Length: 238
Image 1 (cartoon, rainbow, N blue to C red):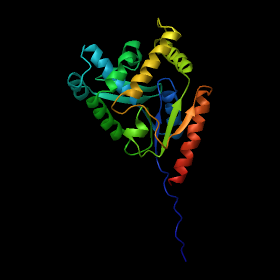
Image 2: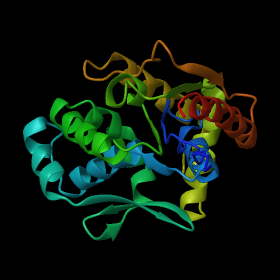
Image 3: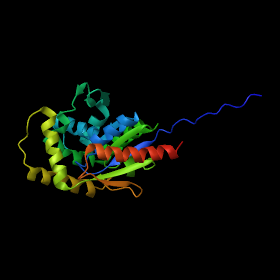
């Protein structure tokens, strides 16, 4: 007599949402987690930065009406390469340019515009709708994917976040930028204020998010914590 074959159900490919303020370690950690799980990494902040860069280049005012043509007309793509994720605007790789101080200064204002936010949120949902993604930003667990199986909210001290931003700026082009730690702390403080006080999709922790303070953690340590959380969620969703 033949017995029925045992079939192991396929592994559930979940959505992992990483939110938190600037410099909390979202992007690097999200990328590492995605690599470990063989998921797709989506840096939503890069999308808003690319729109901001285009607005600066075209000398547009930061209004809904002036920026909507950019949102609609520009081809915006995030691609994965052996060297990490690259941001393509039109046909140009702008991965380094979008990290400039000029873009950083204005990106919060651009991302607060309702029309820009709505368009970007739609694209982000399309990118992650099939699961198997790690997406980082400010409102992923609260607005873009409130149903995400794993939500993590990363925090860190202001000084630690400023140090990370300075290191990031130096690393983008191998040079240095004329900005002090004190000035960077001020910039990040202002960015935090804009992000938390904006009317559209403000930065806040989802009620069911796991909070991790990365101030004293290495990238490896915070990555391992999130992978452990993810594996638990994946196991419970088989």
